[in-house]
Length: 132
Image (cartoon, rainbow, N blue to C red; front, side, top):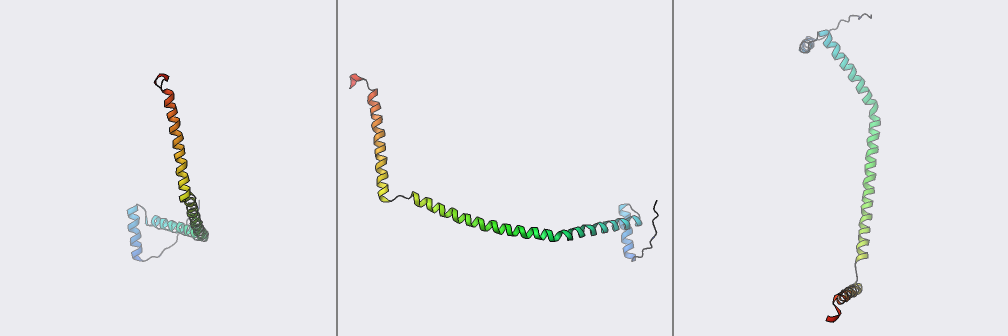
């Protein structure tokens, strides 16, 4: 069993009173309170050291993320321009000139005439021969 070497610790009276009060509230002795706080302090030092060591990597990752966002934003703007151009081309390809409108109207009339003629022929076929 290892032996703990005593270490005399001098501290200001106000600090000792505060530590004794905190120890009493948490159900520990002054010695236990001091040890607990030293353990927490050492753990925080380790965490801080790891965080500081990791900080450059984190900054690099953040910078890479910012660059990626800029790149994607630029790409998005370019794609939006292409989309607008394609929409314009589609609109232009579907616009009909006056002559084309006349031809289209004539084609629709011919199709409607053929449909009506076909319907009339079917009606004639339904009428019995004696009524003709």
